[in-house]
Image 1 (tube, rainbow over the protein chains, first blue to last red):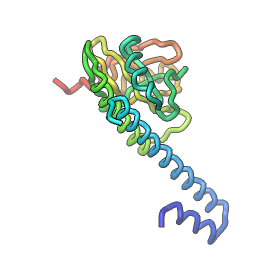
Image 2: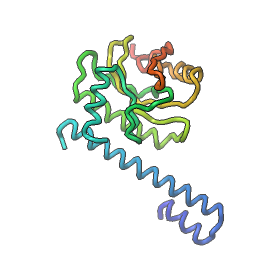
Image 3: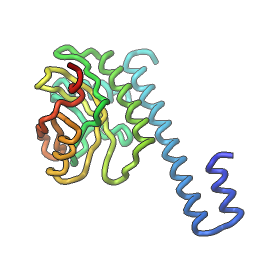
Image 4: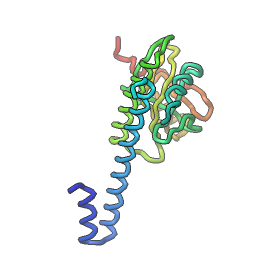
Length: 54
Length: 142
């Protein structure tokens, strides 16, 4: 299970403020990771296009 | 980024002597803050002649640094991550490097630049290059 899955499970098993905060933090982390991965691909594609390779 | 981003940045580097680009927000002209380079990220791309290939390769390398850096350091609100390009008059070369935009006062920004042994920092609100007396990544090359 991913750390996000773990955070979801922890909140479902025990719906508390602290588990909700931990789940929110985990969602933020995954969101940031996804955003940076998209940016990485975006930059790579722009460079390839600029060099006429895509 | 769109297809005009890289040509625009290279044109700006050649015609204005530098640029500060925020890839995360696609911002070409951040209006405020002090751009301070991150040591160890400088890529020299040429002196008078800068080819699009050299620029693109350096840009991609620095972008990779930025993405790695983003995973290691998160300082929301205080610092923005940027790719900076500029011409060093002292060394007669164009370069691309990872930079941070610090939203702090001028004195603190100058202290950061000195602590990082930078040749200069850049005041985005005034367009002023502020010499900080260091040698940048050039230190240790000789």
